[in-house]
Image (tube, rainbow, N blue to C red; front, side, top):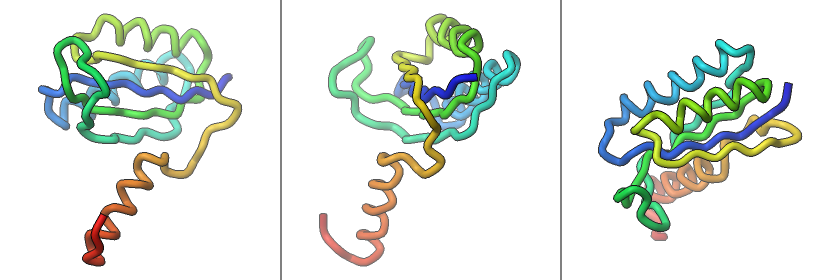
Length: 120
């Protein structure tokens, strides 16, 4: 099986619980087709660089996948049908990163600075 990093952007007007359910739904599709989701990160509601389908913001989800190509293709097919997903991207990688992504690390650094009373 191959390793993949998959990022999807969901519409801004759905709730955080719906975003988590959406991520779990796509993880279930991977599991049903013989793959495994090793890590899921919710990056939260972020501003888009440009409008996509009349949305200025989106909920970002990143998943590390250890799955066959057929499972990833099926997940991408179902994402194109789903109205809540506005964009997705899958990249094949040589190995999966077990540490938090740079997006989450920068968020943790900002939180630490706020607790210390520092300025940005």
